[in-house]
Length: 364
Image (tube, rainbow, N blue to C red; front, side):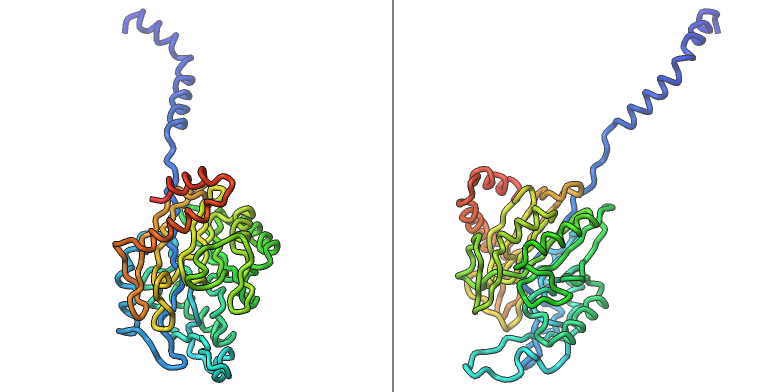
């Protein structure tokens, strides 16, 4: 080494720690990989056949009931549905102890507990039990349902049964509300202030909160949701618009409605997705599936893991074929109806143009 090179090296030595530090800073300041979106698939009402008042169960004991729509549920971190009726062999039904005097049918459902396996095979990881049919066979029937779901590895949703998932290091809680009689497995839908407190508490404990609610009137006349109190057959079923938006204000990141048995509008409110009714999904033999009651869809939502905001969502259509078996519908009737209903719903909003643009941009 020449004397000149040695002299240059001596001058450089004090600078080397700084150069090394800056190199480390450059590495630290480089691009950081963001967490993948949290993917949630949600469907509406599910009743897989009944053994009351007579046995009406699907072919192959339900083994093929969901087969054609399973691809629509696959590939999601959480797969949710609303379970209409208990999984039980209990008897009798306190709801329908004897025929009505007016001759009207009494609707009580009783599906064999082994059908919890059919839900698991289809990919469901969480099902709502906070609804007006969960007590069709009393608390015994509901307890049987919870046990069957637990044994199948499916998390029940309703009241104190909060389903919790860990996705990409984030905790996701799914809580269930309903207008129906309060039990320990039903959070109140009609008491909005109490519901706010419940959701705010959950948001303090978990990173993302999904709210499931069973409410609103039923059937084709109830497709168009409004910011008002709803009744059906003498029952007060809440103001679901007020409820859903209040839940977002309290910290909910996704709100999933069911119970009307028809699709209802979708909106993005303060960055969060609200589906006012997911419609029917699989309702074997005991439900009306004419017109819009026979149109369902799978809500496929992607949520930002840091903010809970909806990144994008899809709504592939499902058609129910007699006597209530779901099939993918390439004609897209349910989605076309959803878009129409959502446009109408937002038309009355003060910032309708902006909100329509947001919905259109995120709805893929």
